[in-house]
Every structure is written in C-alpha cells, then in structure tokens.
Image (cartoon, rainbow, N blue to C red; front, top):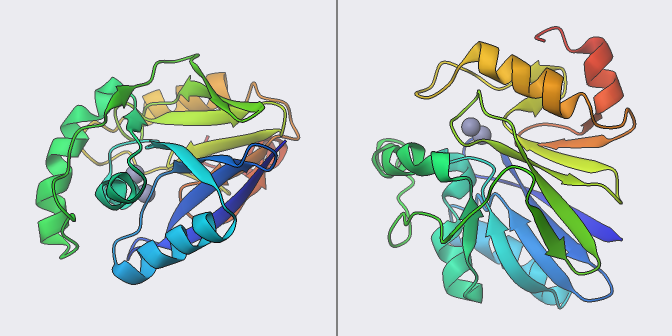
Length: 213
Ligand SMILES: [Zn+2]
Ligand SMILES: [Zn+2]
C-alpha cells in the first residue's frame, strides 16, 4: 500500500504530494512546486529522511505553480518528469509567467521527459497510479488514480467544493465539467480526492455538495 505526504509550496499555496511504497521505498513526486531553497530542503528532507527512492516526477498540468520545482527535483535525483503531451503550450508560457511573478526557474523550464496517455498505469512499488485525462482547467490536465488506496490526485480540475478556473489559455468550462462528471465522478464514492490546492475531500461529497458542477 502507498503512503503519502503533502507539502504546501510557493505563493499559490500549491500542494506537492510525495507518494511512496513503504516496502520498496519507491516514490513519485506529484507536482513539485518548490520555488525556494527552503522549500526544496523541506521536500528533499522528507524524501531523504524516509530513505525514499524517487523514480518519477509527474505534473498534473503545465501551470507554473505545479512545475516550478521540476528542475530542482531533476537535478537532485536525476529522475524524469512525466506529463500529458498537451501541456506543451503551458510549459512554454510558464517561462514568461515565472519572470512576471518573480519566481524564476532554476535552470531551464524544460519540457517533460516522458509523455503519459489516458489509461496508462504507472507502477510505484507494489501499487499503481492510473492516468485519467481530465482536461478543461488546462490542456493536458490529468488526474492520477491509486485504485488500491482509493485515492485520486486531481491537480486543479476538482477541489473541495470548487473546480479549477477555466479562464486561462486552454481552459474550457464545458470540457472541465465533462471531465469531472464523466471521469472523476465514476470513481467509487469513498475515493479520497487530493487536489492541487486546499483540503482533501471525497468523490461522494463533491457529487453531493459541489455547486460548480
Ligand atoms: Zn492550474
Ligand atoms: Zn494550481
């Protein structure tokens, strides 16, 4: 079974998740948002003190707050970054945005090293993360479903009682609504939802109380 640690980074209060298998010590880093040396030390400190072996970083989408830590993580652990191919335009825009917000990338804002497709299954130790395509907040947005654990990482598609903004480039409200209703709401009711910002919720609670869908 997987375990997880959530850390909150950068001016956007973005959730970075370390998902790890306690038996094999393998771990993946979902949305590395560390933007300062202090934030990097917090992330690396957790990973190293638990003797975890990072195998992959995954970006749920290409917005700056979810990818700003990619270069640091790649440099520290020599691991590839994976994302959906449709994130390319957002990656290209993120470079400009990082300068605008005054949180420059360490090194280059490189495109991901590995492309993920809908339905693909990523092995983490003895568990798995399944890629579920959930566009609408951004192009190439994905969610990651850990079936055995009953967890889904939704990036900025679905939040506790809210949904992602759709007014950024590549965003579309109807697309997002369809992603949530037809992909996320088909997961078991008791699935725990770990979002890109804010607190944890469940699929059941969002089906019932989320007024945006
Ligand atoms: Zn976003
Ligand atoms: Zn975000």
